[in-house]
Image (cartoon, rainbow, N blue to C red; front, side, top):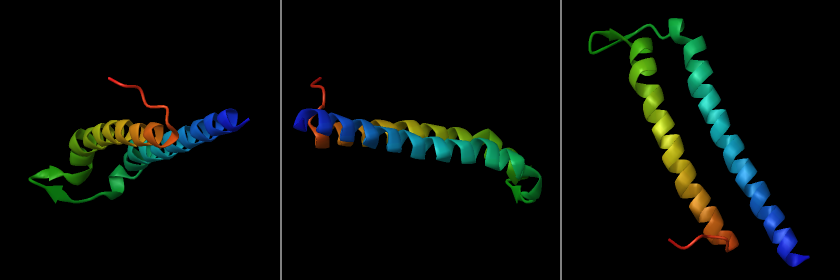
Length: 85
């Protein structure tokens, strides 16, 4: 039962990681778009809401992918299920 319990804990930790990153994705995608009109400001001559949509969101998406890869690798190492390259 110990192996099955460890696999279950690993699966649940992976689900929590994915859920947390999906919440960040949701906040960036829909939260910023929803409140874009209230972001009244200028950044290098462009409206701040335009800058966030055009530059900020894709940068956050790249950080989410890199973070997921790093955290899932650490999770696999911690649970002893890492694949050797």
